[in-house]
Amino acid sequence: MSNRNPLGRENPAPRLDNQSGESFGQTPWQTVGPFFHYGLPWKGGADLVGQSDLGARPELFPANHYVLNVAGAKGEVAGEKIEIFGRVLDAAGAPVSDAMIEIWQANAEGDYTSLTGSGAGFTGFGRSATSDAGEYRFRTIKPGRVPGPGNALQAPHIAVGVFGRGLLKRLVTRLYFADDPANEDDAILALVPAARRHTLIARFSHAGVWQFDIHLQGDAETVFFDI
Amino acid sequence: MNQNPFRPEDAGQPPSLFAPYASTVARSPRQKLVRIPQTMTETTGPVGVWAQLMGPAIADLTRQHAAEPIGQRIIVSGRVLDDSRRPVPDTVIEIWQCNAAGRYIHVKDQWDAPIDPNFTGAGRVITDADGCYRFTTIRPGAYPWGNHRNAWRPSHIHLSLLGQAFATRLVTQLYFPDDPLIEIDAIANAVPLEARARMVARFDIDTTQPNYALGYLFDIVLRGREATPFEDRHE
Image 1: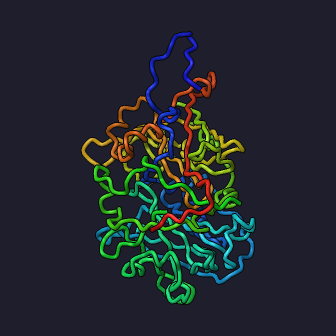
Image 2 (image 1 turned 90 degrees about the vertical axis):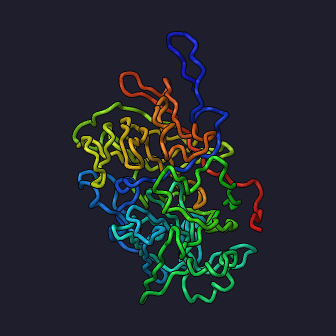
Image 3 (image 1 turned 180 degrees about the vertical axis):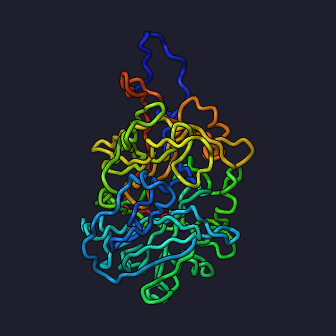
């Protein structure tokens, strides 16, 4: 709708804006800034298999302003339950305390629930704010293998998105699991220079727990993808 | 289900490194992004499970507390489309913003503008079958920040979308027409000039409700699917 003038006069020429045909195109990314905690992470958003409050940071705003929900009840989730954690670090190796991580993964059978309609127990999507120490943490299951280029199976992996103050747009990476023999033949890992491949491999910490640090910049800079 | 890959980002996206926005300098990668073909991982996403993830819609940010918040009541309405102008139905838009005085309900916002006990500034809406959405809020204020001397953010509303797939994720900011701060803002200016107007809402008298609220139109455009099933774009 144009801005009709109820007084019956012609409007001055409009400036370009969101509704202008000549500016049509993909909406540009903008940073989430430092104050997203009451708007994006929800309680339980980082717990894909249980009922904890993992993922949110409700201590960053008054309790009566918590208007977002606690995640709904989850059904029994099949598969090997795992925990993944790590720190988000800047160029100087300093922890990034106002970042947010999102994950997207297949279930234990290697199915994406949005394709199979089986998301009632396991959605495959999670969100975790980082702590003051720059740490995030998810509880989930080890994903199964999904088809990749040429219909060859990919190694088990989790898609990771990184957001935060100072990140104008999301950075995309992947988490693979150390010592998985399928990593050798993974078509996506094969596109990564061998010397940097290790930045995508989560380290086995202890039983069922994997560590995956994300270096935004510096000598150990994590490989980020253009998808 | 259509598994075609999504078109690449267009030229309107900001770079990760934009030195005038000082926080990008130590937080942006220096290595070139590694181009990968989209696999099922990238062409799927948490579709249709938003309620299970985040809970039901909260479309009126002015009615979350005992009384109404202070500020100019506004309605923001528009469509979520892909870059072929097809509607994106049943997708979630998460919303957060500061109050009318420019203050966030966040302990780390140390500016001394007043907190409004009746305004949180968080909500979410879901697009209908035509990709349309609508929410009611108050117009957020401008606020100073530490990026450089006398830096002020223009009034803006943060919007976060999941879209159809992992590949279509978008977080943006809605700006208001006639705001002189946009052209001197380090975050808005990270976007190439020709695409910046896409982030500026339009005042609309038909969306405006008599004796109630001013109306603004804001369409959001996500990456759309390629017409052909598979195009192996990596070299």
